[in-house]
Amino acid sequence: MPFHRILAWISSIFGKRKRFSLGLYGNVNVGKSTLANRISRDWTGEEMSKISEVPHETRTVVRKERVIVKVKDRELDMNLLDMPGIATKVDYREFVQYGLSQDEAQQRAKEATKGIVEAIKWLEHVEAALVVMDSAHDPYTQVNLTILGNLEARGIPVVIVANKIDLKKSRVDRIKEAFPQHSVVGLSAKTGENMKKLYEAIAAKV
Image 1 (spheres, rainbow, N blue to C red):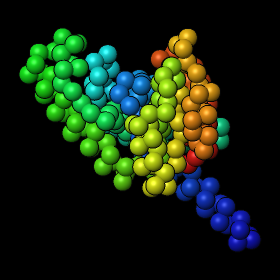
Image 2 (image 1 turned 180 degrees about the vertical axis):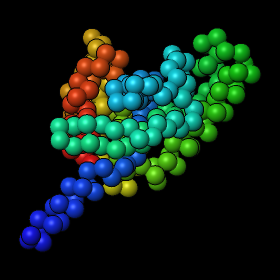
Image 3 (image 1 turned 90 degrees about the vertical axis):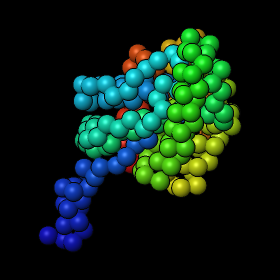
Image 4 (image 1 turned 60 degrees about the horizontal axis):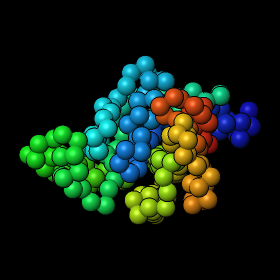
């Protein structure tokens, strides 16, 4: 057998199932946990993150290991990481508006700040990233620029998720225009619309 065919055979056996860590990054309340739950439910039948309208519900990294995603003739073996929302500042008074007591709000703010630091540290351990953005809002924010800048500096493959296309104000084109250097997939993590396109985009990157 020619040497190049031997290499191809070895690659076909061992190369398809190399596990990688996929981190979900983004601002607060853009739908990261909803998306993480959608991916996990699609391929494991289980949800992985708690969802709430109160900002910073996810304050520590939530992991789901061995999520096997099948895309055409490939199987992607990944550890799914739902990261705490990134924010430029955390004000406990924001939580009081949702009915939390001052003590509860201050504790949540402290945990949220710690979670942001943890999410940034995890950049050293992810092999690919989904940067989730709310397609109904202006994507050109300091948080989005900071996240993408850090990922680009580390050479980590990125797919931008333009989430919430089920909303009337959704404008996926605005995100594509803001970040033309990256693959952008418009979808609804809530309804599941276009999830197949996301899986194909992840497969293309890794």
